[in-house]
Image (cartoon, rainbow over all chains, first blue to last red; front, side, top):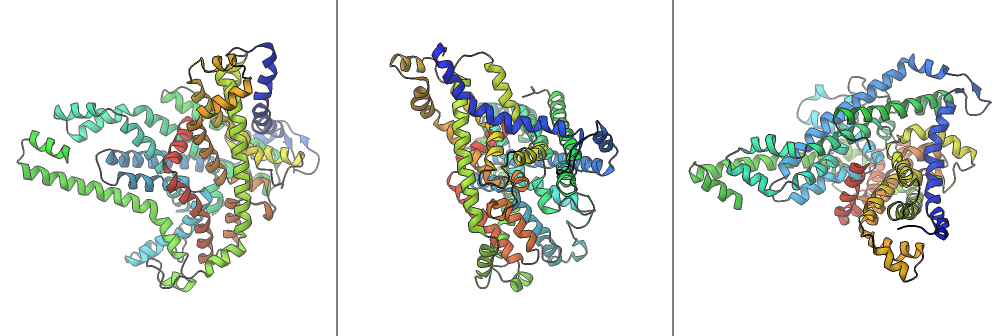
Length: 291
Length: 293
């Protein structure tokens, strides 16, 4: 529809609320964090301009690089955990099967729960003394395998990643299932008549046909797990001895516990570019349009 | 059944052998699916069952059903965690943020989808860019901004980040839906003398009902589960939302597992009921939100 002169005012009234609140509370903070990243500031006293000092410190901060490494570990564990499991279960469900609806309902359930609830539940499951996992191990006579799962630097990251995988498998399962159910019946029938085994049909026909969806899921999985914060904050707070620290958590602690607002902002800027570049890069390799 | 018959008639194998092979395969498939489902749901059931056990019983019998239903855990959790207040705060902020986001977003989407103006595409891209912003990169500046505006620890503090960060996906979903309407819808309305907002309110909005349902559910669940902004922007216990309150409650009660499990169960039940009733809409909304985001 074209606008007449009078309705220019309507245009402004219609778009202004969204534009204002989005610009002030989503875009402006990003710009502000660039500004603060050049400052030394404890949040109370005068800010002091220190140029690129924060970034120089950041690049030499081994604890920060440790958190970047852990973050990448979470991303890799998510991609190689969530995607294959979800795809496998979706392929099993993609047939005339009794109880499909129930399997789907149960599969998606963890996705709707809040991360805090999931983190607290799994903290109880991993609990050394009375946790479910150690109880099961003791019950089957594998006492020696019982661990302080979240309190041992050897196991903490693995334990956290298992929870991350558990939380989101259902999301990808549903995405894959929807894509599989869009494949026309005739394609599968034709393959069957040609004598292709189910295994062959899956590899040569089904998976190639949903390849685009798989790529979208991988990208989603990377950007989602890159943002891990709540879960680790609640489960381990980055410990023990920084073994589960991730970028956002390290930024949070530096800013609000150590009162280094400028330094924290520099980490924010890093996270911003790191996320954009990584996702852009992955989209490029996997051949998907950016945005 | 139909496929079994088809397959057996085509295959060279004798009938009984082939059906047996099929049923072994089916059994295996069901076994895998059931194991997957148990892993998916048992942690939750384990917690709900154990929330009814006394501390002593939990220590010796954590896999069986409770011998007697102990509701002390629930009384303690409700009292100490202040669950009533947490529920009230969460419902208030979620409803308000969802209504405002969807209203403001729908209005903007209407102009972006249906009306020609300069810089329209640039503005749309500007909004959609928000889906790429990692929200954690904004925690520190958001804290400083709201502090400077005197809006920290206020009942409406969380409205600002919640609306701002969920507008992009809301606008994205609604705009693509509204774009699909035929072009001449507005024309007859204009001839009838309808104003531009009248067309929005009485024609476009009702027509967008399915997409509105998606974004309402999406916003509600995101806001209900949100933790990071609440953590940074609120420290008055009277204003905390459910996830934030639960996290600090668990911190105080590292020993009393029963009360912790009772608190978690109570906070989970509403969302599970909501999910069981609106499963289709929720699944559609969340997968659309994820895929498009």
